[in-house]
Image (cartoon, rainbow, N blue to C red; front, side, top):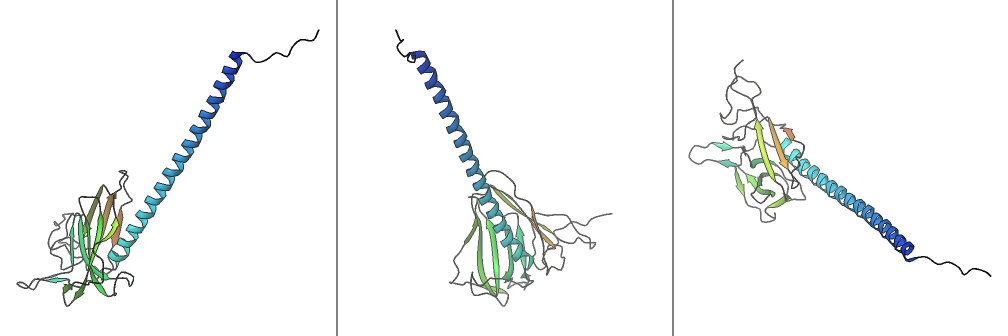
Length: 214
């Protein structure tokens, strides 16, 4: 007599289901890891693109900063051509046509406590600023930043290249170099941007630099 076909036991079915579930879990974990990695890569690429855009904007305009006054003290007739603070820098440069009418404008770049780096612009005429209603203010350069710091460098009292300092006061002469240090939202530091100003006369920042001794 022929034997009846033997079916699967309950234990074998359970083992098969466990193996199937383990395989599906591994596949989903692999897919999830790949998706997370791709998202991180995209976010990092976006962050790098933003970093290059901000640094490119700052580099182009700082490099071509003009030794033109944007403020004249009516009492002393002292003129301001460049003023720098740890979170704020003001200078005159030509404004691109896509931002306004072109010509010399005051660039007022400032980082606020909310992690935003913003730029305001004002037309410069005869040593004073003139409001331009055709320009939106302020222009957002970047947000979500953890920290922004500007530094400045000029000549010391002996005509040598001086140390970096956190402020450039007095403002009648342009510094030789300006540096910008930024930390993004994730805490990663951007590469330090150092710009040499083409029209700098190598001043000592209104007497803020100490004299170096040999």
